Amino acid sequence: MTALYIVGGLLAVLFGFSRLRLGVRVQFGESLAVAVKIGPKSIAIIPKPERKTKKPKAKKPKQEKPAATKPQKKASRPKMGFWDIWELLKAVWQSVQRALRATGKRIRIDPLRLTVVFGGDDPCVVAEMYGAACSGMWSVMPRLEQMAQLPNPEIHLGVDFTAASIRAEGDVGIFFRVGDFFAIGASAAGPLLRWFIRFQKQQKQASGEKGKETSAVESKTA
Image (cartoon, rainbow, N blue to C red; front, side, top):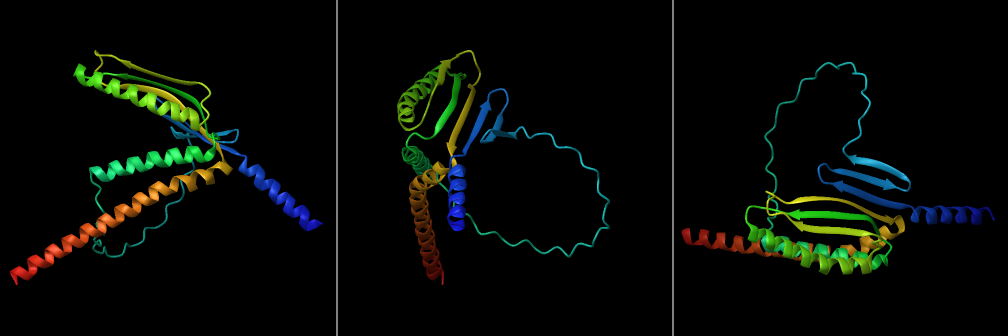
């Protein structure tokens, strides 16, 4: 019986932990504020909370530094072109869609308040940006309302031809439970993993072709 009590207690603890609500709240505009919420507790990330000044420690005697060694050359990182970034953005959007579908409207986006006023030097460009933003909002928002909980979304788009630049301010909070995190991660990993595998194959093919070209040039010069 003792073992059953222990197992039951562990299951109760795991169930309670899976029901714990986590989230992030971002407020931006004239200033930026980011806070992480764990259950009822809120932890400020930006701006960083002030820390108490500690007493200065006694300085230790300096030790002689070893002779500086020549820095080793770092391996060149694969470069991403425009189309690689475009495919990555598409994969991220697919991951977001799959993650939201997997959670079954368990993600809660509250509050969702966003105000964007478009401005700039060229009125034609400002009008084009405003039209693109409106079309994007009307195509994205219905899907978000189907796949997540949006109690009171408030999104306002405007135009100010006298403004020199775009002004944006908002307050966004995204919350979910710990148990939903595993479903989100498993669903979101697929498109990103496929993109990464394709990108690695393209980099290997490009490096192989470069190697063939250099070997051909060396054989001709020899």
